[in-house]
Image (cartoon, rainbow, N blue to C red; front, side):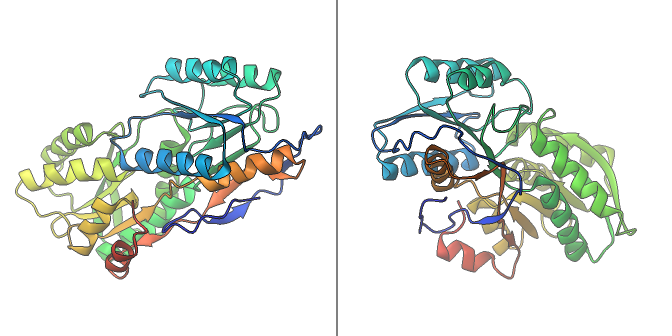
Length: 323
């Protein structure tokens, strides 16, 4: 089902759901010469989004599509709906979407379904009926990411810590599951206490302000769990400005696996980073190929994510597997 991709750090499938979707009337159309849409959700100043878009564009080129209709919603749900609807009117025969939120795409998905246009969702799950509104979801297991973060925090702190959590924007499945996974796993470690949690809205600026407030309200905190590297970097600036040393006075566990944060781990300014691999392009186009051929497509395809620590950070940086 997947297209080959030998680039460093390429997404690798960890597992697939037993539930699947199958095209009842396969056209056996080839991707070569096809018009395909890709709706990105957020600004590409975020390294994750930049790498995700680059992966889809590269895979589109490899597949030989006639035109890739690319749009960026720039954090606007209304714009993302309009973007997808515009792709449909422009003749897209397949659409890849990185949903902004867990709900809100229904009008666009319904329009695609009416025209039998397959939709592949990547990174974030969105509301809808599998096999009708979308044929699959490609992404990480965000609950497991939260659990792995709690385990990494236990190792980083020796099982004793006063933790603050900077969460992603409320209203999407990523934030919800990373929060829940961490909270559930934290119950296994009675010496680690979650003191406070607040959203950083996936923003370095917002996270810096939040961390400043948390340090003032809880000066004795000694650990940070952050839902995204971009927020972690903002929080690290606040820690430094408070006269504390990231990675020493405040132990840090993050999620994403960006080059900047893995460099911080290698340099001792952070302890661990659970990867979220953004390179979905080959898998997305491989899934579309399978759909048009009438092959079974798993409704959920989970990618394998690396845990970066001091033990493997330098090697990962040298290999180019970070982004």
